[in-house]
Length: 222
Image (tube, rainbow, N blue to C red; front, side, top):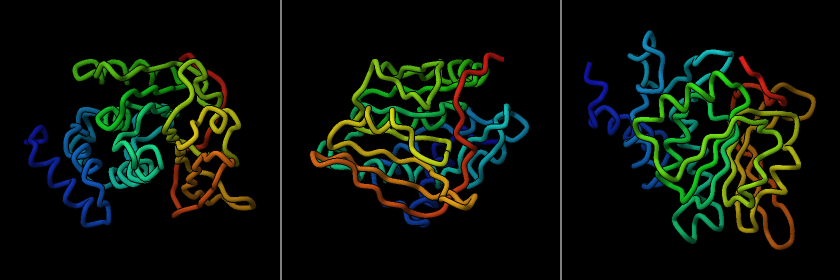
């Protein structure tokens, strides 16, 4: 079907550019990672369409445009802008591992945490053939972040709650940036929240509406 062709990924990146993504490093990363390898076989023909797809256990792989948008926002943080790298990254919600693979191309280190054991195991299997040395997959409660590797220059979440967990803010380095969906008070509407940590504190800015699975706590073994 030609899905393993670099041209297919390049065309997807061109569509992302046309939709407003302009960061060249982000576009190159999106054009590099083979998204079809992270999609269930029955849905593989939709791998390079701009759509979210189910990956089992009530979770989804995000639209390419959403992945690119959130990573582009991360790259706009103070530390990332200065170094042209996301530095040390914490990803909340590994899912099937696709976004982690994208992040690994733009980072010094990626720590990706997943609370659903079947998805953690699935991501480990899917990433094995391309597993970069700078990636660590953790089975754990993402709402607690991952203190052993903190502080993080970049934090990105693939699930949205009513508020940002305090652990995430505490584990964000000064000069770092956090990007996460957050549900607006009094509604079911989610927006992308961008938080920059400065010497003086935290700057919060809300961006466009998005739709992500709910942020939950606790581990699920099976």
